[in-house]
Length: 186
Image (tube, rainbow, N blue to C red; front, side, top):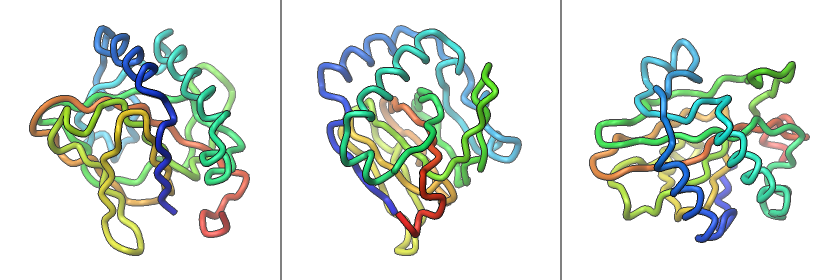
């Protein structure tokens, strides 16, 4: 299952997000990487517990709560709080599979990561490279969506972010536990 959902955030909201994100303090993206994926990950992200991360993440969750296509495709039971990453020239994330379980920082909550989500916050013409490539039964599927659009795919999928050669790719990323554990049953 690979579902692209357009217009999760409207252009005005994306522009407001970007103004805040472009002025934010970013840290090494390996802060949330597992042991094996840390060697493959080259990007930056907002600190997981930063007030801006929580504020913008809540706005993403509010938008998703009102999106019928997202709700019917994902059937979310629990959603890991959205995080934000940035890829610039030379950055990328080699092939990896997401962690099966995520612990919410500062809370006694664990989320089984059935589905991975990427919400694009940069327009495709703002950067070269940076495509999300997801391996499926039909081969590698390349995803590079309009700002404000989301892709949902199985967290167990081998995937990568191709190296950025120009510009900047900004996105929100998160995982969710579906009410249906097996993506083949969705």
